Image 1 (tube, rainbow, N blue to C red):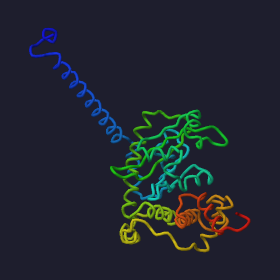
Image 2 (cartoon, one colour; image 1 turned 135 degrees about the horizontal axis):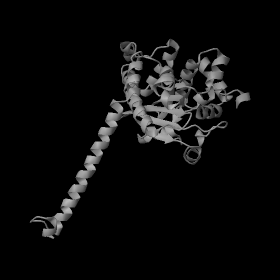
Image 3 (spheres, helix red, strand yellow; image 1 turned 30 degrees about the horizontal axis):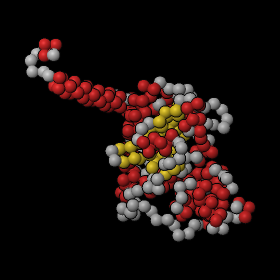
Image 4 (cartoon, helix red, strand yellow; image 1 turned 90 degrees about the horizontal axis):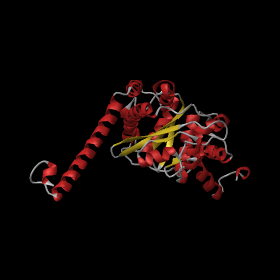
Amino acid sequence: MDSMLGGEGFTEGTVGTWEWTVAKDNATERRERSFARRREDVMSSEAMLSTVRFLMTRPTCDQISQEVVLSILARHQPRSCVITLFGADGSLHGVGTFGLTPAEADRYGSLSLWDVDPMADAVRTGDPVIVVDEMQASETYPRTIPAEGPFEPIGVWPLSLPNQRVGALQVTFVQEPDSDDLRSDAMGVSAVLALYLSLLVSVAASPDRAVEMLNASDQAHAFPTNELAVLQSAAGGGQSRRAAPSVLTERQTQILQLMAKGLTNSQIAKRVGFSESTVRQETMVVYRYFGVGGRREAVRLASLRGMLEESTS
């Protein structure tokens, strides 16, 4: 055995140790190369640089979603984009959309982290979720199958930092994109966007308060980090969560009644004469009042408490 190894001092026991050491070193080297490749992909991503430049203009999340579709990821032929923020209630709240109908956008108003949904899975696991064909979607995420029209590939990337889950970025595509090119671009965009949104969460003192600020900012057409000192004061002295209201206002009650009739936020906005952003903000107050994460639970509890008109119960 010694002669076969070409040297003295080797025994069968030391050969096993040597082989294990070599295998361990090879595995470590592969991990290091993989990490370096991912880091190089992100740092060299033109999409990431474009995102940084655009975020310097302090856009709203709706404007960010639009820029992702029309410019930042345009070479991958995206059709729509959704940005969600992870709240302390364990739900994902839509804070920016582009390319969706009002009914489609309403679906992301409040999404449970445990829903069977690619966005929820991406945030929960911390890994991207890519669904490229209808068969895969029907087996794993049946809710993503459209009632009409062809299925469109979906990509979801978690917006996360070390020890913090911020939200998720979801993009649908006209056709299946090149996975390698998309990986580097999407990783760059999501990394910068996670840092950008986490700033608001830290200033607002809680994700829920940040969601409210994001919704309110749509009316001013400016991202609410324009005045950090003002936001920090508005955060309520560092309270972890805003308390639930003891009663609903007349406007919130009216919106609750229309929610019970099945109207979308867009339809409610037209009915009551407020902006859709205001309606979204008020529905979140309604959710907090009932201690729920979505309109179905809110309507159910309102019905049980006799708060709905007879025509909607």
